[in-house]
Length: 318
Ligand code: GDP
Image 1 (cartoon, rainbow, N blue to C red):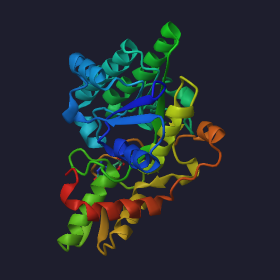
Image 2: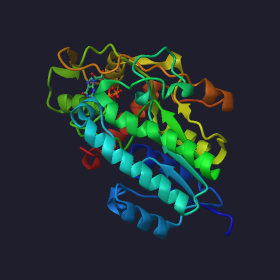
Image 3: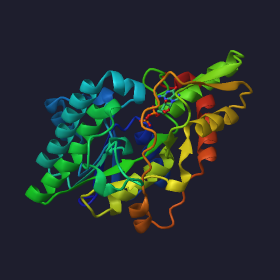
Image 4: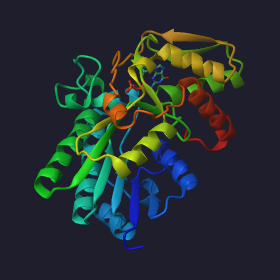
C-alpha cells in the first residue's frame, strides 16, 4: 500500500468530477484510491479550510476541477467575482499541494481563456498571446495564471503540476439552473419544459451562428485520467474533439430538440449576446499522444445526456 496513489478530485461532485467517478467505479483501478470532494466538504477559497481538507485526505495526486464557473451571461455580470474566487481557489489548491508534497496536480482550464483576437485553430502555445474576450476576462485571467504558477513550481521546485484545456463540456450532472447554465444544459431545460407545457416554441439566445466544439463529459473524464497517469509535460494540453467536429449553436439546439422528440420551433432571440463567435481549438497535440482515442459522436452523447436528464429530472441541479 506504501506506493499506492491517493487521488483527490476537487470539484468532484460537478459535471466532470462525476464523469471521472463513473469510470473509476467501473474500472476499480488497483493501487489507486480516489477521493471526490465538493463544496459541502469545505471552501477552497479559504486557505485554512483547504489545508484541513488536504490534512484529512493526504493526497499524493490531485485533479483540480473546483472553480467558480458559469455560462456566458453569468460571466458577463460577475467578472470580478470570477477573477477573485478563482485566484484564491487556485492558489490554495496549488500551494497546499506543494506544502504537502503532492507529486502531480492536473488543473482544468478552458478554451474560452484563449486570446480573443487570434488565428485559428488555437493551440496550446497561444494561451498568453493577447487579451481574452471581454465577456469573461475575470475567469480567463484567473485560469491563465494556473499555467504561470505551474511553470513556477516546475522551475523553482522541479514539480510536475500541469493543466488541461477542454473545449465546451456537457453531460450528466451538468448545472441546469438557467441563470448559470451553459448553452447545452440551458437548452435541454428549456426544450423539456416546452414539451411538458405544450409550448409552440423555444427561445434560443443569440443568432445561433456561433461555433463550438463540444466534448462529452465521459470522454473528457477518460482523457483527464490519462493525463494524470501518463501525460509527462508541465505545459497544458488541449482536450477537445477535432476541428471538423465543430457545430453551430443552432446545430446543437436541433440535436437537443430531436433527442427530446420536441415538435415545436426554435426561435432565435437576436437581441441577446452571441459571445465569442468561435474558439476553434486544435487537438493535434492530443492526437499525437493518443492517435486512436474515439470520441462519442455528438448526437449520441446528446441522446445519452437527455436520457439521463429524463431519468434524473427530480434530482438535477436546477
Ligand atoms: P461560451 O461557450 O463560453 O460562450 O458559453 P455558453 O455555453 O454559455 O454558450 C454560449 C453560446 O450559446 C452563445 O452564442 C449564446 O448566445 C448561445 N446560447 C443560446 N441559448 C442560450 C442559453 O439559453 N443559455 C446560454 N448560456 N447560452 C445560450
